[in-house]
Length: 228
Image 1 (cartoon, rainbow, N blue to C red):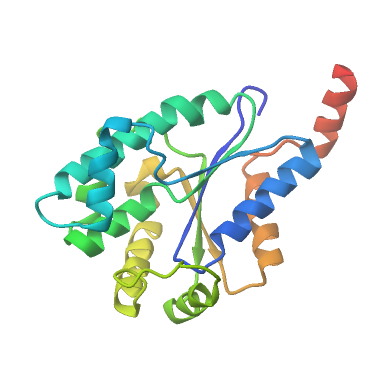
Image 2: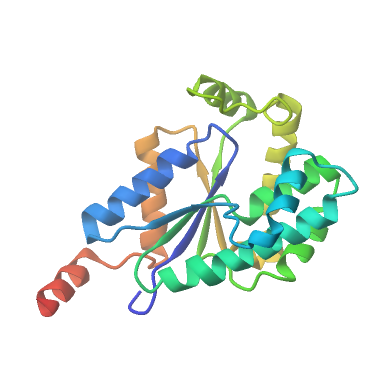
C-alpha cells in the first residue's frame, strides 16, 4: 500500500447492486482515509481510433464485426490501463464498473465463443490484472426484477431478457469456479447479492482488509501525524 493503491473491479448482472457497492466503497475511502477513488466504466474510449468498432460491435453484433470489436475493446482496455489506471494508482484507488468478466460473458452469449478463446484474445493485448474482482451473485429472476424497477431507460430489449441473463450468469459461474485459468481477472471473490446492501458493502470491505488492500486505520493516522 505504500507504493500504490488497489485496482478493484465490480462485476455482476444488471440489478445486482454494482453501482451501490461502487458508491459505498468510494465513500468509505473518502471518509476513512480522505482519498477520492477514480471510478470508471468497462469501456472508456481512450483508444479513440477504435470508437466506431466498439459502438458497432456492442450494439449491432454479428459475425462480420466480431473480431474487430474484440480487438477494439482489448485496445481500449490497454489504453485505459496506460492512461488512467496505472498513473492514478500512485494517488488513489481505481474502481471499475465491470472489466474483463463482462466481456467474456458478452462473447459467450452473443457469439457462442468459448470463454477461453475470448480470454486469450483479450489478454494478448492487456498486461495488468486488477488486484480484486468482486462478483455480485444473484439469481436471474431477482436481478431482472431489480433492474426493471430502476428509473430511466436502463433495460435493453436485446439483452435484459431471462434467457440471455441466465446464460450470462452461467458464464460468470464457469469463470468464478476456475479462477486460476483466468489470472488477468486478479483475485476473484463472489459476494452474495441477496443480502442487504449494507452487508454486501461490509463483506466487500472485509475482503479488501483481509487481502491488505487497505491500510490499517492506526497506520494511516500515524502517517498523517508524521506528515503534519
